[in-house]
Image (cartoon, rainbow over all chains, first blue to last red; front, side):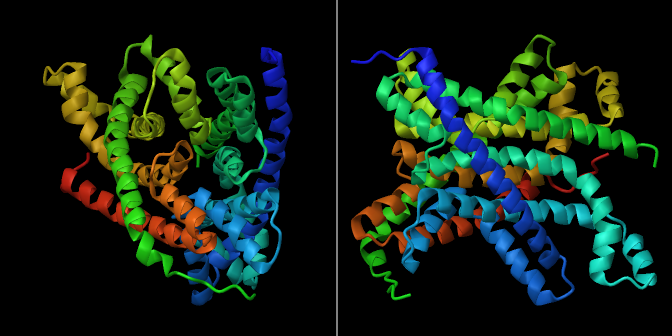
Length: 219
Length: 223
């Protein structure tokens, strides 16, 4: 039987961590783009569009991410596409992230006082211009801390993709456990690696929030 | 798309689904009650507790909040037996959910406690209450009332997150869906049905928590 040193275990886990990071980045950036689109739909002036966006958000926030992964994995196959795990994982995570980011950002847009909308309307701006030049620049400022905070959820969400067979940190943990029979050490290390990824994000989110509060204290 | 949707397996397999729903509900009930209790204890420790306890609780909260639930579950179910602590899959799932919700609700409840006006603590002290009595009788309930919506959302999130306990063979709703798809090869339909059930459960759970909130916190002046 092969003996595994702690370094062997750690090295293999760290190699798999690259995939966790890559998938997190793809999901976050892709989710951000889809989320922005969804935000525009969510605050559209047409009711049907608003209702559609609300249903989308409710659907993705009200069902388990794991189920969304399963449906992406098995559902896409119905169209005759051979779905690799990374595609289902990326797609499901992007759509899931978009729902949450859109809802977070909606809160930020609605926090901008009505006077700003009225003032820009009185300057003859169209709705897109209002968003582009007046509302979003202000909303983006308050949106930064919760958005960074949500990125932690995205990193943790990628762990579920191991269940549909995408080999990232969690899956590597399972594989290495099966080879070494040291679940305590392996899952402990896996948890520490996730912690090392997520904790700086959590902390910077908190720090940004505090900084913003200081900036707003005198208003 | 030439795929024919079939739902006739529902007739044969609905007992599995009902059983799965039962386990999911059982997990979240126990998880919510014990998890919130743990959260209250930790929030007290972090906001008002002795100095030596604060960093310990902070470490627990940060560790849980920054690692995936799946890994916590695996660590408890696969990792702890090597320390001599054998757990059944339901016990492990319950413990993982309590520990997880405990950490999240700690932060939520702490926010409620720390937003209590200072005068409330002073008023309690002026009535000769000990700090703990002040916490218990003056501070706690209005604090919980303020953060109840956030706490409810977190309970719903933990319920949805509980779908991963199927990975340690706890027979919840997701486990039932996996079982059915392995028997019938109707993967898409099985997951579609269970996803819709989760959606209904999430909406119902939100309503139930709102009703419970109205029951625990009858209209009262909060300040």
